[in-house]
Image (cartoon, rainbow, N blue to C red; front, side):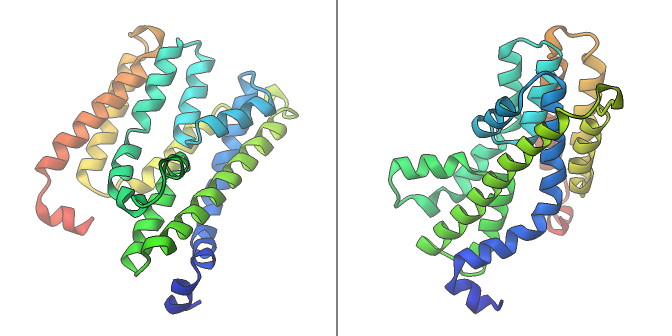
Length: 239
């Protein structure tokens, strides 16, 4: 499909753009669903978690905190900190939906993800705007939402029949590493990851109520802001 054809059909462009993302989304969702069942969630509860949270990294973190019997404010606080980036995404693309009603803007904010944001910004740079860009965003966002919900429920159903003796706990940290490592391209990103990991691993055995993870996230955010302000302009341009 040529660029001119894509401009005429935002729905086809959206489907074309999300196809490569499915290869990464499916195993991530399956692991999330399996882990939910391992710690005591039913398939229905796993699906409801995907509906109400709809954030893969936050869901996995919440599941691990649930499994550790962390208090509710730690679970919710960790999820909110992990998803703070959505505020920046919203501020960046909010003008795209400024002409819509408040109810529709709330709906679009609900299905906002890293992928929907990145693809919409990409298509905007290629000429999409106004209603065309809105249709494109909604197609991408709701397609990913539906796929994530389906895959996590399938993972939960699979997890319900997997013997506990198989011990799939290792899949959770491996999934996080698979998401993290490809994104470490600049020195601030590497520094941020190291600081967050150091604080989390160092403080988790010491701090009560599993708050070591929350402190690690906050330390990583602070490290990222500090290191980004000091990185040479040439490296920023290269990234």
